[in-house]
Length: 350
Image (cartoon, rainbow, N blue to C red; front, top):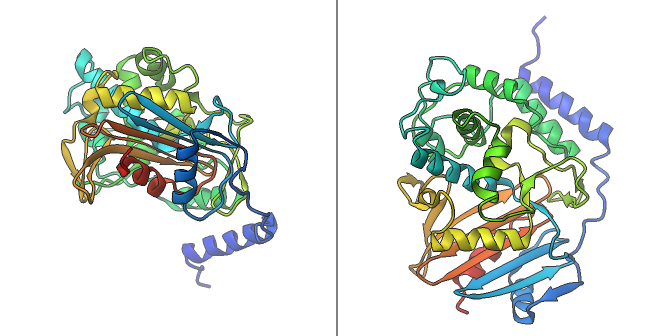
């Protein structure tokens, strides 16, 4: 008797999980908190620009030269948020720092630092990883990885439980595609692991020693499963905190509004460690990319340097227009995108 296709088996399992987990009975989604603090003008701007979707806690900052305005909805100043892929900018900065220190080269191959074998994955360079042009997929492929991702989404769990050994094993099995821009959490995680290996330490220690320590970002740290500041999915369900394990270099940090203000100001004025990561050096679709940092020309002709982030229960955006002397930070504890809000605030004249 013919076996059912793998895709069919997966769909049957997924359907059973949906029914068994009670996902079809959706809770009432949260609403944007009415408890506000900060600049009244910015509070009104945020309310006008905020798009649809579940919202709960929201922390926003707009920096115009030396003036900093903030708006907080249901959040204390020191509330922490998962910043998701904004973490990639830390990894990009670590690459720039490692280059400055002579620990690595642009053309250092992955196999020189990690035990990924001598095949196509081993031949990927650190520069290709940093500019998202390694040819690696967004996530490891395969039935088990796909099923794990689907189950995690249904259960609102952390989809990145891998330990370092598993990450390396996934890399050894990975297929490499065309060396062009393709956003890859997989690749950025390997870059973080490789840079840690080059410095003979672990990724989190490297971030602390070379970025958060020098910038005095005392509240920027790895996520933990029991962090009390939780987030909500795009449908309004409470989400498990994302710790991300060996994928920390792609999105494992949490931070606060004051820390992110300090971080983006240091990036904008060029004083941040590894600031060379900001320089756009490769195409990224209609945009350009440095070491993780994206650079976009706006409709009005301005140039913004930015990165966004998203986890199961949080979204974020940091960016600046150096010529205009303007920067923005948005931290949100739901999975609803804040990109339009952030870009709108960044482009708006003060």
